[in-house]
Amino acid sequence: MTAPRWIIHLPTTLTSLDGAITLAAALRDSLGHVTAIDFGETTLSEEDHQFLRTRIWCDAKLDGAGRCRRRNDHAGPCAAGDE
Image (cartoon, rainbow, N blue to C red; front, side, top):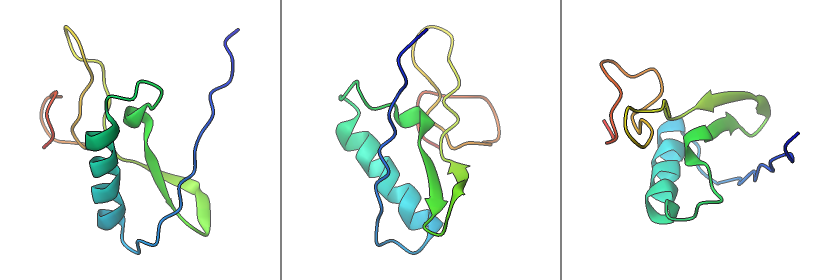
């Protein structure tokens, strides 16, 4: 049995999904070296509907090494780079 993982909920003052995705991508790009953060599992929710989560990135395992960094539900093949 593995130990439970902890989730950090980080409220923002942003009022649009696109703005929240942009911020999440900036955090991923600037803090990607921190191995304790699993950015591939990042989800977003509205403040009053936190049980309804929107997944941001695909995060599928790629052949070789790494994970897909394209948006969730992207068209075409998975890739290590953003769309």
